[in-house]
Image (cartoon, rainbow, N blue to C red; front, side):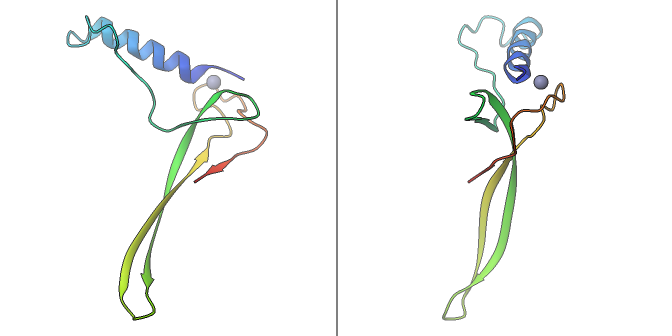
Length: 93
Ligand SMILES: [Zn+2]
């Protein structure tokens, strides 16, 4: 399995330190994608794509309440190089 996520995070961090004066001298600059998950079968990180579920819940008394829930799909293929990431996609709650 590829390590494009880690490589991209590292190269973007280096880019920021080199090209943006506000980050140049910061030693502990942390740069990372927001939506990541560890894949158990490979022990590597994969990006996830959040999906929002929105609905109106009607209570027993007839009151309507807006509800929302978010789940995530793990990318089956690397978005950078196209390599297959895991045996099957995983849905995370
Ligand atoms: Zn890749």
